[in-house]
Length: 259
Image (cartoon, rainbow, N blue to C red):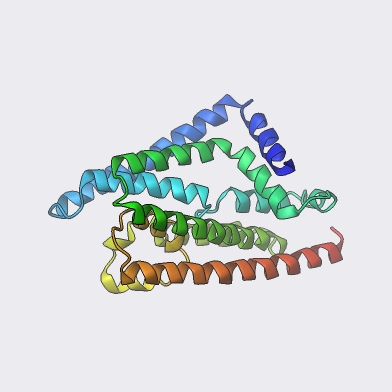
């Protein structure tokens, strides 16, 4: 398949830069280790409500899922914005393949090491704190798939902003920081005050990270899980429709200008 070949080509190009590979590995280790150490210190004051294996597993899972579903300015949005900013987007309009899948394949190939490390992180998180039962696994798959589509739309919207701003980096960074905080990637949502937690769970961000992670810790289909599932499906549909309309309108404007 052509998109697989595109991803493979970009990944093989990346492998020719060993220093970048080492940097990717070190960044992943430092980021995850920092969060684990920080929260290991914090949970000492929770009177045993949260154990060390639980918090280690949580952040291994969260960091891996966040990377794969592109919850924190993922590789697709980054690559799309970068191509537009450099004035190289026109090349994609001339190729006889769909633009988004082509960009996604290129982005995955260029960030192949990040994806591999994310998968390893998820596996390690599952080993440290295994799923409660078969329901947990089923819920995880459902939440993970919806998170993938939500993250895809989220990235398309953020990347497409570069069609409309000379430099959308400021807006992008603000949204990215908010996403990390509200998705549960930096702070587990269950540690927020109850009223604030319920408010956050109504936004699209928790569904991209906290939802899949929490699903693996769930042993029954309770009201909270059902509400979370409905919320993420709602936002998945809204964001994908919004991304589709925003993308098409932006492409038409871009082609009309003739740049």
